[in-house]
Amino acid sequence: MPDTPAPVDVCPLEALPDGGVVRYDGPGVTDPVSVFNVDGELYAIDDTCSHAAESLADGWVEDCAVECPRHASAFDLRTGAPSGPPATRPVRTHRVEVADGRVLVHVGTPRG
Image (cartoon, rainbow, N blue to C red; front, side, top):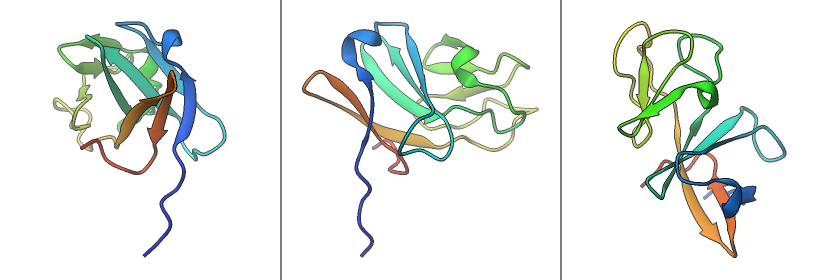
């Protein structure tokens, strides 16, 4: 059984207020990850749109989905599923936890 990688320490919880987003592109990730705070619930997804090389952290969040700033496709923050074309492939979701006031992302572990 492979070792489970350690979670990535993204930021202090206070840096992610309700409606906020933090993009993380540091140690522990091969591709950027964005963490969104929607009504006090934290969601982590791959940051790059599956249709175009665009940062989803720069998108608009509504109804637990983020719309790519380049086109009309939106991605469900719970599942990573796109709303429709032009994006057809989902983005990965990642499990998020808060420990000792820090936002930790378990990259590669889908949101449960």
